[in-house]
Image (cartoon, rainbow, N blue to C red):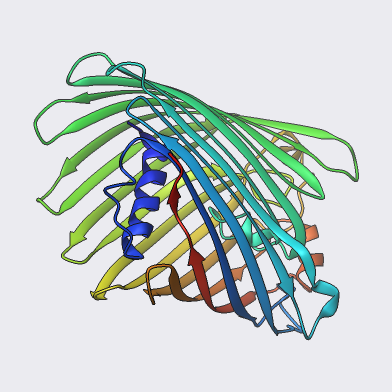
Length: 399
C-alpha cells in the first residue's frame, strides 16, 4: 500500500494510463513497471526574457524524453522518474540548448504493519527560466539558470481506529546566482471525533538560510506555527478542509492558513483553495510570505477529451530576516501575480496523446533590485505561452 504524496503519484499514473485506454487492473498488481515516453511540442512565448519593456517573442520546438519506473507491492511502493528538455529557437539561436531543463524524482512508501507507514520523497528540477522553479509563488525573476533540490522523509502511526500521528522533515534549496535553503519540521496529531468530522493539531518549524555569491554572506530566519484543523464532508460530493493558526517569524506575528473546498462532478472535479505560507523563490535572497487564492476545474465533456482550467492570485512579501530588519533590503514591498491556465488532452490511440495548453501571467511589483535588472525597468510583466504537442507513452510490466 502507499500513502500521502506517494499514493497521489500512483493515482496520477493510473489515471494517465486509463486516459490512454490502457487497462489499470494489471498495473494495480504487485510487480516492477517501466514507462518510457517522448513528447514533442511547439511553443509560442511572447516574452522570452520576462521583461516589462521591449518584449521579444519566438516559436520554438521542445523535445522531452522521459522514463518512469517503479515497484509496487502490498508493503512497499517505489517510484522513480527522469526527464529532460531540448529546445531549438529559430529566432533566437543563442537560446538553443540540448539540455534546457531536467526533472527527477524518487518516491518511496513502506508499511511494515497496518499501524506504521514510512515515506520518502526526493525531487530535483533545473530550468533556464525561474518561473519553472517558482510554481508556488508565481514570481518571475527573468531568464536565468535555476535549480531546486528537495527531500522529505516522514513517518505516520495509527494509535487507534480514530487517532493517528505523523512527523516529517523537509529540506529544500533553490539556487540562481545565490542559494536559499529551508529546513522544515512538521508534527501532527489527527482525531476522528464523529463519523463526518476530523480535527487535527499541528506544529511547524522553519529555518531559512540564504547565501549570495556576490557577498558570500549568510543570513538566517526562523519561524514557528501552531495550527488547528477541521475536515468535514458537506455532502456526498463536497468536502471542506481548514487548517489555521498563528505563526511567529523573528518576533513578527502572522498566520499559517490552508483552507479548501472541493466538489466532485459527474465527469470531473472543481476546487477552491486559499493559503498563507512561506516559500523559497529562485533568484531571491530571502524567503517570502505568500497569500494565494486558487481555483481549478478538471472536466471530461466528451469521452477521452480532458479539459482543465486554473486561475490564481498571489501576493508575495519578503520574510523579515535579521538583514532586512536592519534596513538592508532592496526593491518593493510586494509582488502580486495573477495567472490563468487552460489545458486540453485527447488520446488519439492507445499510445499517442494530443495535448495543448495556454498560460497567462501578470506580475505587478518586484522584491529585489536584481529582479528589476533582469526584467528591464522593474515594471509590470505580461506573459503569454501557448503550447501544442504530442506525447508517446509505452507502459510495460517487467515482472
